[in-house]
Image (tube, rainbow, N blue to C red):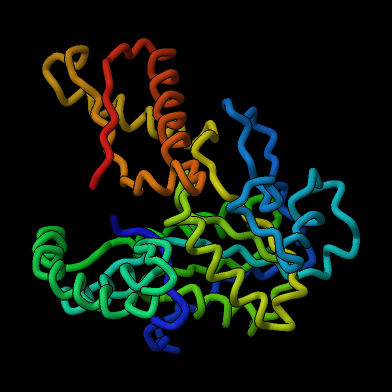
Length: 326
């Protein structure tokens, strides 16, 4: 499974030229605080948008408990006057991916050097880098074949940049002035680079949006752990209120968009009603779910139930199945 973090101690050197310039809105005078609980009716179960969730995996440090002023039920009209002086940042977190075939092996090393991906007993944690190097070298040839088949590299950075641009435009349409940043977990531009830029731009309030619809220790959890470490160590960042959207698989817009895609693809078959809808999801170790309380499996299954309910409301009655990738 290719998903989530850079372990402290095994981080590659950051390329200072790799981070793309942040997007900015020109009219700071029209700045308003984004509302995190939107007016659209959430699908069941209710989406959780703040980092202050009472779950073991959530941040409980003083740094991130400052989210209350940001993630509360503030509307655009109710925003306090002093918010107009704030500088809002939105940080999109994603996995990252090799942009060329030569990037594949070091990308895989970054992936497997993450202790949230390969968990070693404490006495053997010093072997994390050695194990990551071995696995990355062994797996690189096969992975290169896969990336070669899709054009020689991952399209994830391009897609994520396009999402960032779209969010920038959507915020501008709501008269919200904010700079949008992209931080990748295992490849350029790394989360560390994005955070450096956020500090350089003197952002005073930050919204973090992991681009994983469901929460997992190995995806959102790992990326947020890196942020937590960075913010703890920096006096300026430690004072910045941060709101994290931990999962958003229940949002009506997301569910409807997935249903739209499935409904469209079904029309490519001669007999759409007889087609089985096959959902394929990244797998996580059973120990994450049973021993660490990872909600990923539960959220994934809830997500699929919501999508199928939406399809049935449109008269699409196809059977479906879910399988997890090893």
